Image 1 (cartoon, rainbow, N blue to C red):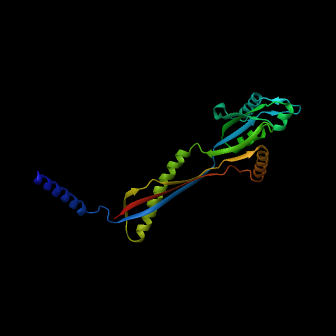
Image 2 (cartoon, rainbow, N blue to C red):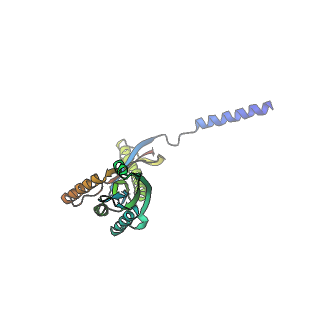
Image 3 (cartoon, one colour):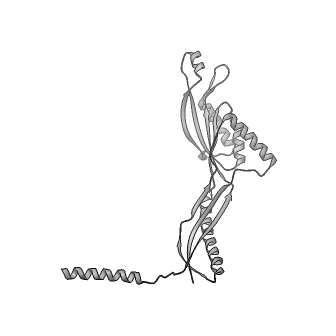
Length: 240
């Protein structure tokens, strides 16, 4: 038993020694970083519209059902399909305290929030132009994206790796070396700059729409802020 234990220790020691003596297959390497970036105009604009019941002059309340029907009909006229509209929230709130006191009763006013997926700034302008000022409580852009975002990411990662190899080649040539195989490739780091949500009130929404229209008149090609994608990848190449 003692002999077997000693023999096992000697075997493990010999393996460790051989591993330490094994030659490094890549004695000379070069580490480089490759980058690739792209800017694209978004073709997916996610918008949230909050609607509320309200009272006309004389105390007649406009029901949430009529407001919903009018809004959905308007959205359809602007080319927004039903499948691109979903309910984000459904709630109710108390009306003005002074009105409640005057009527001697507490009345609830319903609210509903819709999320819509648009495809352009022109479609957004058309939607805003037809909104009911009284019924619209809030309107804001949640985020923007692009239908080909996954393809763009793949293309940029490939481009970043190719850029790293190109850089390695001219750096190696500067010292009389040649680039061989890639030893390691780290997952590219993404830098993505989306369009941040902007929540605005009904009045601010109108002001923003007017400002956007003025900007579009001054620059007919004006559109949403571009989505910015950038990838950095670190690659280790062997030198020969």
